[in-house]
Image (cartoon, rainbow, N blue to C red; front, side, top):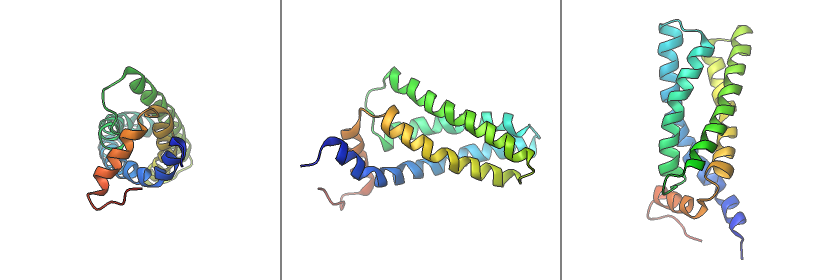
Length: 153
């Protein structure tokens, strides 16, 4: 018989796919705001990164909490942990954006690299720290996303 930890690890690839789909939506929000600020309004890239990332972060919390992890009742601890994980990602992304743009990387290539770099950190932090206590609820979310024809183990 598998332990709860083994079941969670086994479902991680599928859960990552749901997380990545939500991440795609977050990226569209983030990139759209970034484009308007940096390219059209000529806001400095690191400043635009803070603003655009924050918009994506609000979107991320809502969708990942409700769809990916099915967290149930809102707890202050998950908000604090979510802000800590995303704050760390934001700091790293701003630093990386600064380094890459100063190295004359094309703006959108730098943005793409930075976005991919924060994906793994955010997933690991979200799954194993922010919403660590909702494993059973996360399983239900995956079943609902996979549809009624999903295999059950």
